Amino acid sequence: MRKISIITLSRYMTAKNKFILKESVRLDDQRKIYNKIDEEGHCPFCRENFLKYHKLPIIKEGKFWILTDNQWPYEKIKNQLLAVYKTHIEHINEMDPLAAKELIEMFQEESKKRNIPGGGIAIRFGSNREHGGYGNSVLHLHAHLIEPDLDKLGPNEAWRFKFGQPKNYKSKPV
Image 1 (cartoon, rainbow, N blue to C red):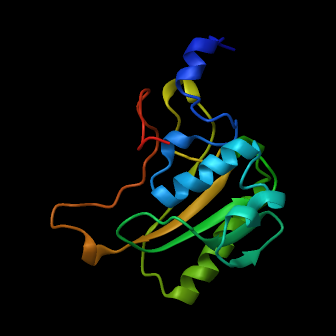
Image 2: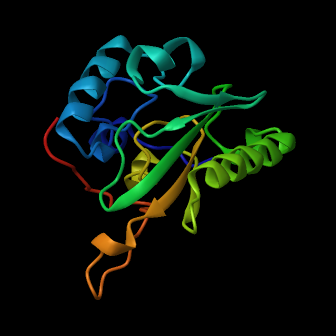
């Protein structure tokens, strides 16, 4: 295992809270909540904290996942579902293999209900603060089902999901 110096690590840890990466926060109202989460020092996606911060209804709760709409959806999308793993894990290697089946079934069911003709599923996992992170703002396994709004895209534009970010990446000041 490679050792990381405190100086190197501190460049990427603007949050006091080890469960969030404030550098990945995109929106002003989201930033306010993340500042509070930072002070609280806990994981906002763990079941005991989730409803404290997430204000949208829970669509479905399974054995492994909580399904809801994303409270802070990306731009130019029609639907963005968020599935949060019920146990605090950060890597897919820790996930129960049966959880993958449940996740796909939940996404299929909601996709049928909403008549989603197409889109994508994304799961970022792991934590690498030394290299700027993987783009996730919460270090707790979660998945997105995203239907881009093709009518809102420009003639040469594609909708993209971020995996990874530069070492010195900074969003708006937090």
